[in-house]
Each structure stands twice: as C-alpha cells, then as structure tokens.
Image: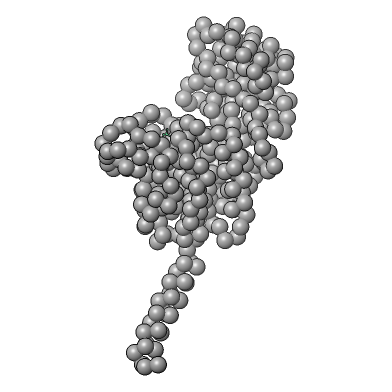
Length: 353
Ligand code: ASP
C-alpha cells in the first residue's frame, strides 16, 4: 500500500471515530408523528384552506436538518389524522408505544407531532398513563407545512431540544409551541386561528425555549407520569364519557340521552362555578342514582369549580373538576372509571391529578 493510501485511510478512520463519538454523545430522540396541521398541506403558500395529516414523518424530519445536530433522530408514523379525529384507539396505541420505547435504555426522550385542536387532551392523557420520567414532548403548528412562514419547523426544533434537555425530565408531559413550554395539565388552546394560541392560564408556563435554549420556571404540582397510579396496559377500550354544554334554559334531553346511550360518566361544561339550571340538576341527580358518575366542570376558560358552593355536591353525589377544563375532566374521568365508579374516590383522584 503506498503512503498516500495509508494516510487517506488513516484520515477516513479518524473522521469515522470522531463521527461515532459525536453520535454516542448525543441523546437518542424518537419522533412519533400523528398528523395535524404540522403535517398539513395546501395547494398554495397563502390560502387558508388545507388538509391536515398529509405529510409523513420523514418529510417532517428532513424539513429541520438542524435537529440532527442536537440528537440522534429516528421517526415513526403512529397515525396521520387531523386531531379532531383523535380517538381512544389512537391514544391507547400511542401510550403503549411511548411506554415501550421509554423502557429501552437507548431511548432518551420522545417528541410527538400532533394537531393543535386536541393536543391538550392527548398531552393530559399521556401525562396520566406514561410511567417514565424521561421527557415526552408534544408539538404542533397552526400553519400547514406548505404555508408562508410555517411555524412547524421551529416548533419541531425546539421540541427536540427540550426532549434532549436533561432538565426536562420529571416535569410530566410537556407541550412546546411558539417558543413556550407548557405542562400538559395546564395548557389550553385559546384562539381558533392565531399562531400564539396556547396559554397556561392557571399556573403559568413550565418554561420557554428560544432556538433550543431553555429557561425553566416551575415543576408540576399534581401527580403525573412516574408518580401516576393510572395505567392502560392491556386496556383495549375506555369507558364512554360525554361532555354536555350548559346554557341558560338548556334542555335536559341530552343528559337523559347520554345515560340511555350507555355513558358511564358525564362531564357538564357548566356556567360560572360549574352551575346549571335547576331542571338540569334534577336530571343529573337522576343520572347519579342510575350509577353514572357526573363531574361538574365550567365552560369559563379559567378558574376552579369548588365543591358545595352553589350546588350541594355531597347531597347529589356529584364530583367537581377543580381547574380542569371539560375536555381534560373527560380524560381523567375515563381513566378513573377504569378503577372505580365511587364518586368519593373519584373526587380524590380529581384532587390529586
Ligand atoms: N385541525 C387541525 C388539527 O388539530 C388543527 C391544527 O393542527 O392546528 O389537526
């Protein structure tokens, strides 16, 4: 072998060793894609209409090559739906996949791409049923991948950076959008179209992420992930829970219909402090007598529904949701009903999670 070939091989092997060492130093982050506007596409960069869940996980990853400088990345497609079509079946599959992957020592964190419409429900569900302290970070976008100034790529970049950050561990499931890091329990979508739509009205942000640099503000104060007693291992169906919207002079037919159609639980999106008309309260009391668990939440975007304020929960047998939105109260009630249908025990779960 001539000296120049030996030198070339030596240089190549040094590059290989250096490259391998860099890869070994980086955390391994898996991106699980479920669809949403972040994977949406439209015919032009400026039109409002588009279809969610069109683009696959590889295209999402390749649109942000910079994430490979932060972590070793691989991707899996779990679903490709607009999150208005998110279902119990996809939740159960996602929970199973996340728990399996996080149980592997080579996996350091998970990013889940999702639609913005129901990201807060999926995030809270995973917050209750993932049993690992490793980072699980959901992200989304308000603009489709084909739009002018699409917000997806930077959101993915920040989400990967958060998942790769050791300080993200043991903070429950997180949602990273528009430079903000939210806790899954607190996040609420507050605007139907704005890019800055997500807020954490009761407890504030978990932190902020600016081009992958993070400032952390708080930790969760309710049980979650590793400390959660909920599990969906081996569960193939969740109980039916309906959310009913309360208005002035509402008809009570929907309460009776939910019971007649097999709901095991009802969440009322009440007015004010979880209130409802006298007639609705009577229908609720009848539902409770039939063994249906009724949780009083509020349609007001923030604040907490308290026990026995204007409604005598002790007498009727209702549960109160505290600060949980009706959609999140529905998630917790579905999981609680896997354990018990005793209202007092379910109230304790609502006070703890
Ligand atoms: N409908 C879309 C979804 O939730 C909206 C979005 O992602 O922004 O999938």
